[in-house]
Length: 136
Image (cartoon, rainbow, N blue to C red):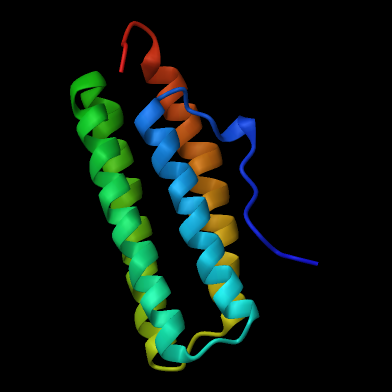
């Protein structure tokens, strides 16, 4: 049985670029999950973590640029969520590198926090709420 991230319509924000980036994050996240489940080398896993982090940083930047013009208050709040999440990812990255983080902890973070909470809860809610009266 595969433990992979599956895209659902409920993850749609209605913003084409954001949704495309979210799908890409699912794809990169799945590559990391598959590498962990296949027990690939630490170096391979670390490359995939770095790749995921790069995509997340780029995605957060895009989201913030959109929100900055749409809703400055929501932008500030969302940026704080992003900073917290990035801090958490970088912490996990360091701990994994030092051998202090299990694969299951890393899997839990990817599937629950990064994807589950942030995309499903924060982003969908936010972009649906701020979309009223804004095209793109």
